[in-house]
Length: 380
Image (cartoon, rainbow, N blue to C red):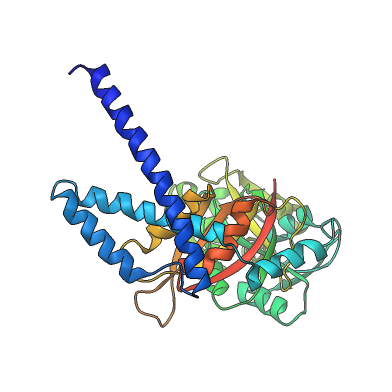
């Protein structure tokens, strides 16, 4: 047989597969109706395991694993279709709908906002990009921001979540496990690092450099070219600039922003010292209350998945089935729980889409635990 004949045979088989698949899904819908009438859950793991064993054995040794993967996907499609046919609102979905209706049409122009560090921090710059006239309250560490939101001291908080060069801010991810909050907006800030020192100081005079650990990581190539210079992490880049400005020494410098140069009366010894020119940090704006503003097209959720092969695959398969794009996936170990991880997903989907509604109503069956972190717009 030549190639065209082989392809023709494949086409005939595909036609049969499609007809049988449609018929299977229609029967699945009838099964869903029966389960609903008799109060039976859609997902029956024991039945699925037996079915996978049977089809794998039927396929033979060479095709066993391929068949398992194929039918795992078919099962996900079937469950998704059954859920869609019998979609019922959940408390979470009702909460989201209420928030959409009750949130003001415009993002607030001014409010009391918690930021980490001191005046001149990148968090302050991001805050002023999101709010026109914010009243900023500074906290020493990230936990202080979460506590301020929990206790109602501030309505909003600004936190760095990830950097395009240095990666995720793990301390923030770890704190997200223990606090209740909602993400209401995000912003990607271009980060341009300067090496700042007192007027008259030269680069060859420097023996110590202060900065935040993320900024240090982002400027590793520049720092590696300074042998013998000690690099000291501090809680914030603006704090680093303040330390240098208030120090009696002339052999210290800070990696900080251009804004801090003018604010603390320093001069720059080198500019744009980050490893990559397109260096951006993504900041999230959090609130104690769930606020969903018009046009929100990104959603963040956290999940605890069972420690079993295929647990993450099943979640991703369901999102793939729904046509929801996963733009961020991060995992962090859960403290005091051996071999258990919290998975963080950033999803790209409109809050008004059917797929979003269906996913929000299906989260319970996809994982052991989940937390909806909010839906929002990213400001660029």
